[in-house]
Amino acid sequence: MSQIQIPNLRHLRAFREVARFGGISAASEHVPMSQPAITQAIAKLEEALGLALFDRRADGMYVTEPGTLFLNRVERALKHLQTGAREASRIGRRQRSKGFGRFDRLMTAIQLRALSAVADAGNFSLAARTVGVSQPSLHRAARDLERLSGVDLFTRSREGIELTRAAQGLAKSVKLSIAELSQGYSELAEWRGLDSGRIVVGTMPLARTYVLPTAINRLVQELPGVQIGVIDGPYDDLLYGLRHGETDLLIGALRDPLPVDDVFQERLFDDPLAIVARTGHPLFRKKKLTIRELATYPWVTPREGTPTRSHFERLFREAGCPAPAGLIEASSLVLIRELLKGSDRLTIISAHQIRHEEQLNILAPLPLALPKTGRPIGLTVRKDWQPTATQRRFIELVRDAGREAQAVQRSPVA
Image 1 (cartoon, rainbow, N blue to C red):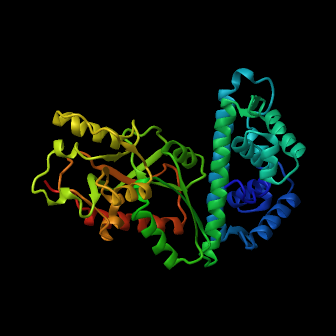
Image 2 (cartoon, rainbow, N blue to C red):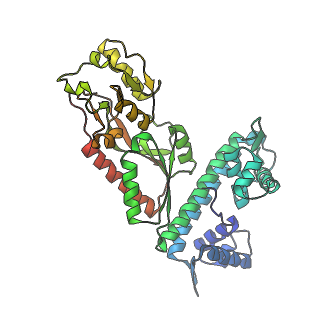
Image 3 (cartoon, rainbow, N blue to C red):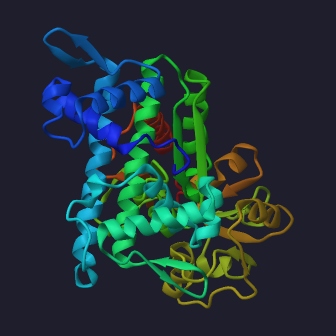
């Protein structure tokens, strides 16, 4: 996200004020720029975007259709900066000796890029390489922002540079602001009839088997030029990226309760657990299975502390028999599949995750019900997120795939 070309912030503010007041003369009374400077700012912004933001008439300047799209993103971006500056000033009030009360109005594009890059890299040299400027230039931009705010933003650590608590909140708002501008560029491309929008999805294991690839394939069929980035990782890392505008949405197991209050969850379907074995396993010849019988076989299980491992342990505890010994702990579906194919091992896993293996007649769930093991799978987005048309279409396709997954979900029967 931080690699997009951030326009001159003074130009964005000038654009917003001209749109608000319908002319350069009126706007000049509300922005610290002369009328010629505002005229030049609008011209440069239009040149950079490659389209007209205003319809210039004798009675004033009227925002064009693409101008209206971009104005919405500019207002949201500047609002994020205002919120971040206010929060940084509040948190850093005790260290504050000077600076400007509304320093968000004075921030520059290079300062935004510097703070965002240092937040990610934790080092001025690495951040400078990321941004593509010299280390002294980036260091100067970061320290200039610190002087503008009047708040300590950076502290040294053994690893390099750490952001203060005030800077962390500001950096989050800066990244969300940059994300809004990126959304704005995508919407302008969509308005031109180009399908070159970008979607970044954070994904967890339970969505990778069917829902996500199905939605991606269908979207690409409709919009061949769309760019889709998929990021795998632990939930906490994915949630951080979502809240900082680095990803657009998460797909996977939902959390209850939600760990933060600035995201929203939407359930798509429930995914039950199943006891799974290779096709042809001796247990498939049994008319009735017991937990004690399952305990006599070797197992592949998730690591300790995971919800699925807890279900596994409770299964034997409630049956009053010891859990199987000699467990192999694994989370890779590829490894689990191969371990089960070459042995009589069993595993406990999401029924949805073995969808393809079941279709290929490699693995199958044993006929033993595991009540109260279903996990809700769905979408997680920022509460204030405003998707582009392409992103809205992708969400529709994800919902469709979720409904299909729910319809064909086959829970084992006792």
